Image (cartoon, rainbow, N blue to C red; front, side, top):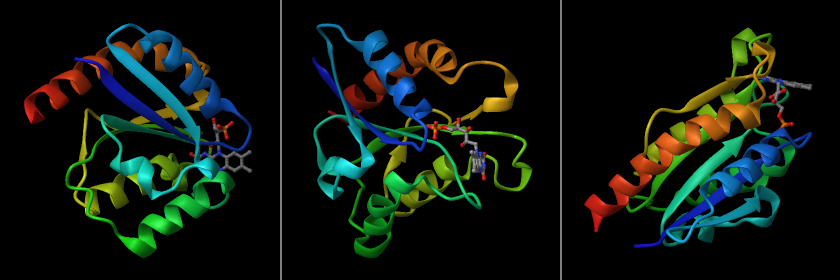
Length: 158
Ligand SMILES: Cc1cc2nc3c(=O)[nH]c(=O)nc-3n(C[C@H](O)[C@H](O)[C@H](O)COP(=O)(O)O)c2cc1C
């Protein structure tokens, strides 16, 4: 069965987009269909698509979601759709130098989606730009296991 994965990217300087591109390469096979959408081009229908969603977002300002993610985040908050059917993952990007707000961008989406009834697949990733490990490299390694979990989650749900 083909698994559809929609990656929603929240980014300011492109790192989260690199992560999504790396995952597209890693996951692109006959059994997996991946589509990456920059969040400024996404609306709430992105959460109602077939398959699973991966939120891939960095953190800016005072622990905020990036500018290109703000409208989508605000729409979720305002309209509060019932997302009980949604299975999602979160690959968050941040920097531990911002100790008080480390990885809050991914965390905000995670908390809001959970509030709306969606169920997360796997743990929320908190990439640390200060770690010296490139986010896209960390993603490629993490992605293999997450893909397995996503397949299990959707098989059980069917
Ligand atoms: C002005 C500025 C503010 C930031 N604020 C935070 C923050 O509050 N918390 C955090 O964990 N990371 C913060 N970061 C780090 C970024 O989220 C991190 O570098 C990330 O990898 C950038 O990804 P992007 O290129 O996809 O936007 C900040 C970076 C900048 C330049």
